[in-house]
Figure 1 (cartoon, rainbow, N blue to C red):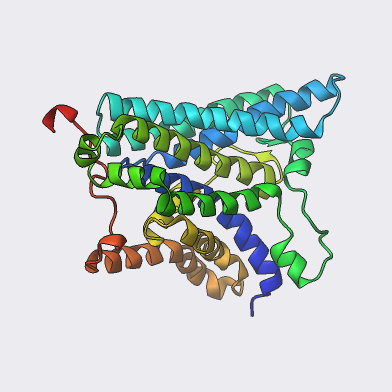
Figure 2: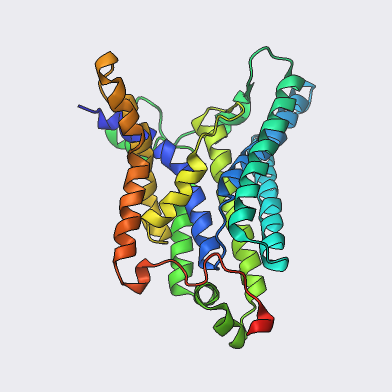
Length: 331
C-alpha cells in the first residue's frame, strides 16, 4: 500500500512545474498560438534564475550583506526576464514574421535546452567543483521554506508543507481561469483565438492580444522551471536534469480541456503518476512493470485526446485558429 501522507506532497512537488507550464500554455493557446517551445521556455526560466542566484551568492561570499528579499527577488526577476525574452522571440517569429508555429516552437525548445546546458556548464566551471552540478543551498532555503515543520500532523504535511511558489502557482491558475471566463479581457482573448478575423473587425487588436498572451504565458511557464530547481531539487542544477516535464505540461493542456482551474488537480494527478513507479514493489521480478508505470501519464493523455476528439461539444475543442497565422490583408 502507498503511504498517502508521504506520497501526496511529492506528487504536489512534481505537479507544480506542470501547473505553471500548463497555465502559461493555456493562456497562450487561447490567443491562437500553439507554443511547443514551452519545454525550452521552462529551461531558460530555470537557468536564468540560477544565473542570478549564483552571482548573488558569490557576492555574499565576497563580503556582501545577505538579504532574504534579494535572495528571492533576484532569481525570480531573472527567471521572468529570461522567459519574457523567449516569449518575445517566439511572438516576433510567429506573429510578426508569420513563421510556422510548430517548427518555431520545436526550434525554441531545442534552443532553450542548449542555452540552459551551455550556461549551466559554464557556471559549473566557474564554481570550480568536481561534481557536474551547482548547489545553491542558501537561495533554496528561502524558496523551500514551508508554513509548518516536517514533523507536523497529516494535515500540515499534505496542505502546508510547500514553498510559496507552490501556492503562487495555484493562485495564478485560479486567477487565469477567472479572467478567461468572467472578464472582458478574457472574452477578447478567446475571440482572438476563435476567429481573429471577426475580432479584428470588432476593433480588437489581434496582434496586441497575441503578443501579451504569449509573453505572459512564457513568463508563467518560466516560473515552473525556477520552482523545480529552487524548491523541488533543493537548489541543485545539473544539465538535462529537468527531464520531459515541459512536454507533460503541454499534454496537461489537452487533459484539462484548456481550463486552468482544472489544471490544479490534474497537475497533482500527473505529478503522482510521474513518480508512481517509485512506490511500487522493487525487485527484479517487477522491473518491467516500473517501465509500464512510467508510461501512464502519456497513455492517459492519449486516451483523453481520443475521447475529446470524439465528442462534439464546442467547449471541449481547442481554439478554432490554434496554430494558424493571421493575415490581416486577407480579411
